Length: 96
Image (cartoon, rainbow, N blue to C red):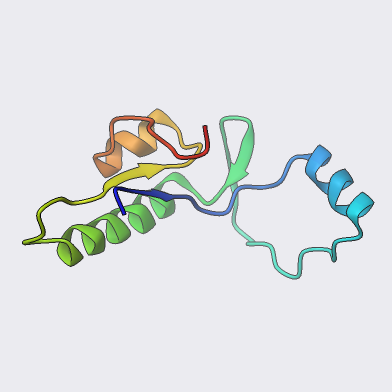
C-alpha cells in the first residue's frame, strides 16, 4: 500500500447509535473501561493512544525497511498533540 491509516476506539456519537438501531444492528458487546475526554469524544487516554500508534508505526517501518518506498502512515481523527507525539505531523487520513 502507499498509505496506511490507523485509528483507535473512539466513543460513538448519539446519531450513530440511532442509525445502528434503525438498521437493526446488534448493540456493541464491548466498551473500554478507562476513557478520557479529548476533543469532542471520549477516547483511550492520550498516552495509551500514542503508545499504540508508535508501536504500529515502528512495525510498519520495520516491515518495509529495505523496500523501495515505505507507506505513508496517517492517523484517523486524532488530535494534533497525539499526531505530534507519534511523529506524524500531517493530517493525511484516508477518511476524507
